[in-house]
Length: 378
Ligand SMILES: CC(C)(COP(=O)(O)OP(=O)(O)OC[C@H]1O[C@@H](n2cnc3c(N)ncnc32)[C@H](O)[C@@H]1OP(=O)(O)O)[C@@H](O)C(=O)NCCC(=O)NCCS
Image 1 (cartoon, rainbow, N blue to C red):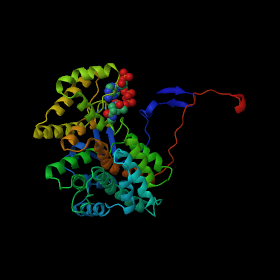
Image 2: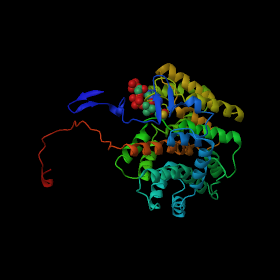
Image 3: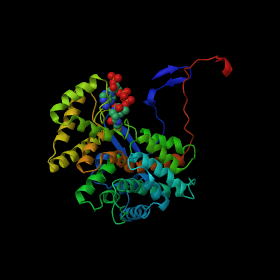
Image 4: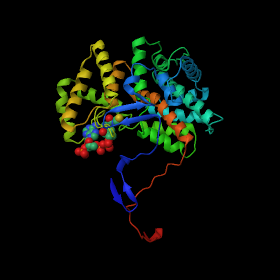
């Protein structure tokens, strides 16, 4: 924080409370994450992603009939307009999937005649549609770029199973589905993270749902936010083997490089999502007989804690989980986006329910009193 003529400046808005929310609470000092009253440790492994979507959107865990209704709404909303499918298929095959997703969601707004309606019920339906359609945009593009036929959504499958089915072309086993579902649960919401803040700033102008989610996707993509999970696995590949970890990290720290998947703005202790992902990564790595990824990760985490007092964050072990599931690296951040669409849209609806334009100040440190000089004299 620094004091200036126009007030106190907090670089990166650190420590600034930008909204009141009932959706989630990130308790950095104690390493706790709450979703609408439930500690994440209560939900991880117990609640399904669809139950968490209901919790975030409706404020309580669903009854059986409420859950069935939400699942059938989501399943019914999955298919994309033909024009959007054709648009996705027209993109160069080497387009990074996060770019495809950002443009795909933006395009969805062009094919919704009711696009600007932000009244509570229409906005809620658009939110559910986006939760259902974001994975489909990614899966269609992935099949297209791989030169494979599109696999259409299967309404009988859960959100996690349907996405895996649409990218792989075969219905996933229970264990793979459960792992993916838990990853979705752990990524669903996280207080005023950068992409959620973008979504709230955007919708606070009373624009539309598609614009707000498009802003959020563009924000999540960066390597300091959701893009870090792809950075982690690329780093592990670059290191290559556990015996090279110490030198690699020492070198990187000497060059003041950031180690992807390490550190957090709010958590001053362990990110409570990391142990769940670490456990999944350990189980999957041992089943695959490829223990080197988790060995390297554990060593990096140990060194970073010792040298910098920084802990692993959500992206650190999720990278190994996705990699062990055979998911292509550039789909890691889109998977984060799939899960976080539930949180973004819940925040958008919450912002709309009690809106005020979000418009902070800036502190000007440029020069004053310049006089205009005609272009011919400059
Ligand atoms: C998450 C993150 C952006 C938070 O940033 P921040 O709150 O602005 O923290 P800063 O970048 O100011 O870092 C504070 C100090 O810790 C160091 N640091 C933070 N994260 C680091 C990392 N991953 N590797 C090495 N050093 C790191 C910084 O270099 C800085 O050190 P200094 O005070 O000696 O200059 C940052 O930790 C980071 O870049 N992590 C890697 C990317 C990542 O995993 N993002 C996903 C977050 S869920």
